[in-house]
Length: 113
Length: 112
Image 1 (cartoon, rainbow over the protein chains, first blue to last red):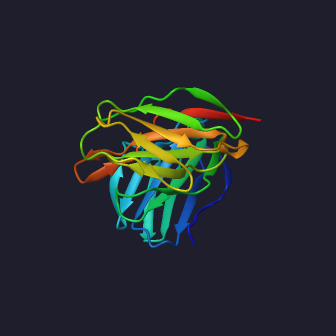
Image 2: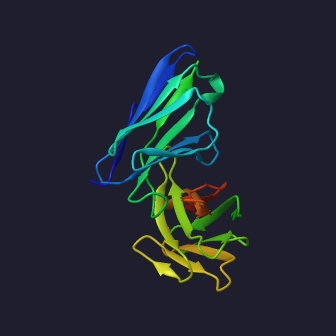
């Protein structure tokens, strides 16, 4: 199994809603990542979890709250988002933290109304 | 931090080799060069990486200059399915490890 699975594929939410994005991998990888990608732009690193601990937060606003319940799961909790937060949110994993290639999921496309 | 410079876009005829250049003149000695591609509406896909030596796998070849200031990704026989944005990434070292930071990339169009 070499897949990173992200759910939901599409999400529409209002600015007052609370929602979550979910990411799952069963490759035994010990690092997981969230990237944000706006249209026609490269992915931007948001968070890195290493051995289930938050290692990097790239100055992301607190309305985005990551969570790593176990080594296979990564969540991104969303609250009080703005329309400019609409983007493709990509999850990735790597075998060891900060080394090796990243395996990406297909992304969750978020629209904030 | 090492940054990369790539052409905005390139064309390639189907069946021909696609050579995608990348400049990374400020690369440090322990920073690897990685290549990913992103086909429309999909997540990025790892292609290949290297430190000093040239590398080849089933997808592509990576040629790194001796001074490591530039590299070229070679797709030997491009197909229409290779149309994508190709990202050259220098995995940046920082205290505690490395970060994978994407640059603007090259949009490759493979034409029949």
